[in-house]
Amino acid sequence: MPAWIAVLAVTGLVAVTLAAGWALHRRDGRARTVDADAAEPTLVDSQLRGAHATLVQFSTQFCTRCPHVRRMLGAIADATDGVAFAEIDLTHRPDLARRLHILQTPTVFVLDGDAYVRTRFTGAPTPRAVTAALDRVIGDPARV
Amino acid sequence: MSDIPGIDPRGPRFGATITSVLLLVTVGLGLTALPGATLSARVTDPAFLLLAAVALLFLWGVASPRTAPWGVLYRRLVQPRLSRPDELEDPRPPRFAQGVGLFVSVVGLVLQVAGVPWALPIAAAAAFVAAFLNAAFGFCLGCQMYLLLQRAGVIGRATA
Image 1 (tube, rainbow over the protein chains, first blue to last red):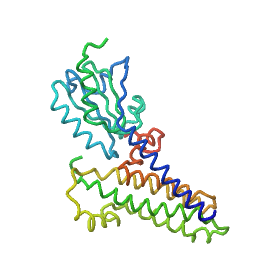
Image 2: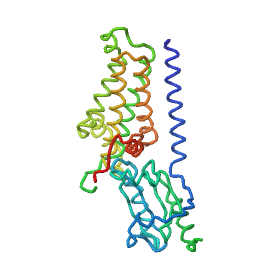
Image 3: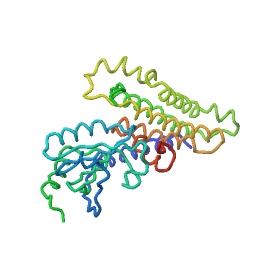
Image 4: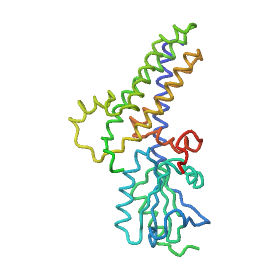
């Protein structure tokens, strides 16, 4: 291959990777409101769940951003009445990851007081997005 | 997890920056020169030698992250000039990512030895994407892939 085509290909590779990085960055931590028709009472022990909501973080031992998200969610749970925080390590739980369709860590679920999954965050959410999801769950406790 | 000392998260990103430059040069060299006809020509190809060097650095990063060259360079030259990191990071994810990089590079090297055209620049390009995303966006592709690899049954089967 002539050198100029190789240079062009290498430049294209950098451009495509940059675009992919931007796309990943934008998609990261997106919230998805869930219409769960089944509760997940076994996910977090009932004694560890919050009265109004529970933030459940899924991590693995090979997750760079999980410690940071753990601190952020823990602080929000500490500061909010009736909200608890729980972390589940998926490193040796492929069965759970498959059942819950979790493809990457961190993934964060917001459970309501009855252990229904109300919001899913794929990636690292912002504190503001977590608070908004909690407001939606707590402000609307009488789930139909 | 608190029993494992944390590392400065900027260290692996510094290393990933150097690695991505080396891999980009590898891709360029691999594209300009097609694999030679003879085995000795293929393994003395500059792209092959450079990717082999990168693979050795990945191996070093997996086997002994504390002594790996880019990490040492970072701690000696860069870290003293920066402010303290806001938070420390678990050293296992970047080490795992080095293992993924090693695997991809070795696949490229083996296919080049076997005389498969384009295999070496393609493998180097894949490793470049992962290293560059880490350097530029702090995005650990190898770590993101962990659950996917696990689901495929490649790694981390249930210990129960």
